[in-house]
Length: 500
Image (tube, rainbow, N blue to C red; front, side, top):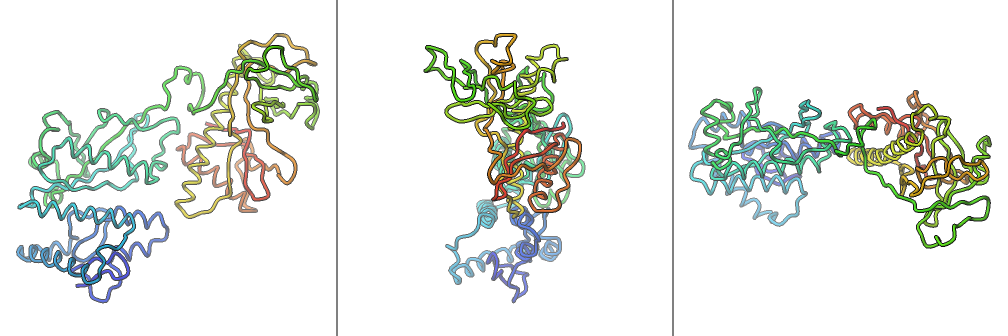
């Protein structure tokens, strides 16, 4: 008999004296990463006799210990009594009853306490049912098995099936949302889990799962009676029957984030985005502002006038900031802050049936890309945190960005000398400072992947691009990644481009 001196402090009858760690604590110590250590702590079941730990252990004992103990049924009962009193005595001697434990050990002890309470409250171990439940996700009609370990709980046989299934479902969803496994399910970013219990389907697990129907009669029966019925129908394996273990699998469907009819007009997924209706447009040419009489107290945005005269310039001039292959960028001011205003060039969308509508659609797509970029940076950071990797500060130029539309349409045609907006819909983003110590850097091309092995920042951006593909299940690829790099190596990305 020995106890885990440098780990969990528990006593195990078959652990040789002198061992400073039980076998589970030794596995945790030898695991190469924090993620694997946490998986062992939270999901591996431990033999209460020898301390061996296994991911799919059924019952309180491993195979060799079960065989040894089953050799003499009286020995099993005696062993349990010895273990119970010896652990209590050891805890009392070492004064470890009040020692603060980490959350994983606390959770494990709570589970053991549940089992001990259930056993002591029952005169017959056949009154107890252990429930293991694995998660499957239904994505666009395809069933994807979760990489998350099963959630395990123990119930008195008198508990109703409805209560048991509800409890195990809540535990499973909580583990799914908090453990980080939600990013590994390859759920498309425009989908989410359908949390309506009536949409779930259940099966008794195993190599050949059996679908079960939870009728009102089933839900109102006891879990013991239901387990026994499943055993009589040979829907539970012999090993599970002997261990009073019910292996379940629940399949949860996914649904789109938005059901808006407008989303059908756009490629890719929908994303949260801000929009504003601008009551009035104001103009600025060089240093003086034009403000319409009687509208001084209304919400407005200032827009440069006549900037379109300078579109052939290679540097910002009089409100003109620059242009790309398809868009113009020019100066504005909103709520006292300088902003950049983006609109599509008329020539770039001239072949469209409605250039005005095409401009609005494309700008909305760009705003959605910015918001998707925020999501992917957040999930990339959480993934790095889980692996213990430090990242530079990464962000998209999306803070307070919004899509705006004038409440009154523009006069058409417009004179170049007085042009403020090309269309009545425009995208507003923060105005970046391209001067000083900030350096503009391009990390990948439109059709070329990034190859930035020369420095750590480049490697981080290559890893981010790969993460986006992995996290979106291959449905999303950021292209033409570029941004401003600060002296601290923080990066602000802008002008998002993506392939879907």
